[in-house]
Length: 99
Image (cartoon, rainbow, N blue to C red; front, side):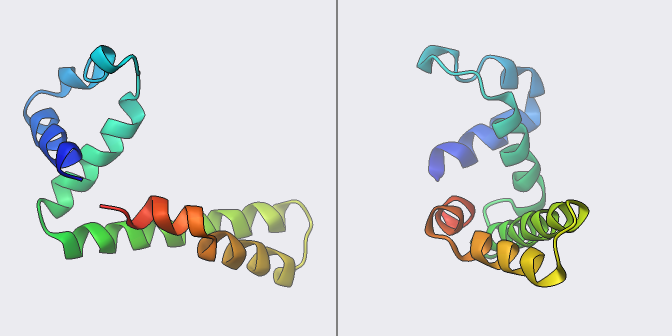
């Protein structure tokens, strides 16, 4: 969204703002702002690049879930099914692809 873009640009120039950006709102989310700022560094204001980076992050999350499933002794099918169901679930898609 626009607020995230404006804040990410601001944090790029002054990273110390990350620690007190949300205090007036009663929140403390430096990890969130670090990720948004990192994406901004690569994508800038290009929506295509934002979506591409978010698609890579979504794929990496699914791959991580598959790996965890395999480490827990599950079959390839179970791991792949868990990853696919995770990726296509509504709340996950909305989280990764909402600008």
